[in-house]
Length: 261
Image (cartoon, rainbow, N blue to C red; front, side, top):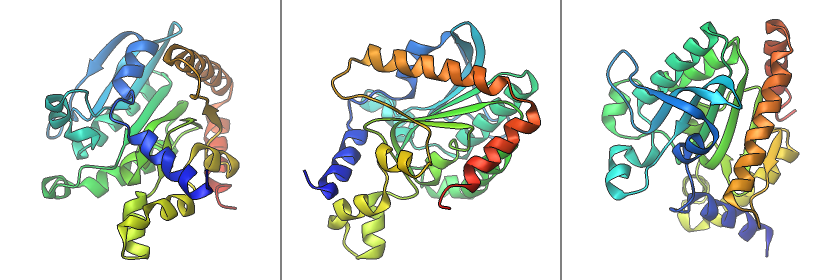
């Protein structure tokens, strides 16, 4: 398999319609989950599920992108593409978690933010930017996990964290390979070449210190994958909670300063 094909094969795997998304992981990782709705400004966005529950008996706030299983669910959830209300709901829950000293877990899996004109009218870009700004100084541990296609600013809006994790066959990028190819070569069919150039696979991003952990998927059952992920997040939260608030924020700052150095 060529390197070009390897990268684009990961893109196709991350986009697989049968791939589990956020709600699936919440159901199997979080006990006594209570979903919370609304951004207290406009409405509720079904593309983002958020709420509180227990991870191995530890109270946590969990926020997940969800595209739905049936065609009816996918229409309801904008095919997993969040609107401004989704990002504002996520931030509301993060600020609540900060107040009550609950760790935050973000599950990322979206091709990007919803691109309708109504979303732009309600401040899509501003909502994403505010999340990036506020998460950088949130005074509680944040663990972000890319479970599928982590695309564009829509995914990055939940990606400012203390520890970033990717499932082996997920991807994480500021733009889709097709979008990149259309801009660089005016030819979207060059997406496989763009996928390799973007360095969007879990292995690429681990090597470049963008993420800290890869959860292996190949030749493993879903239960094995979720068990490892759950145990890793639990241990990582315990490690982060031993730090003072100042030390936590300093580590988070250094994590992002070293990317691309």
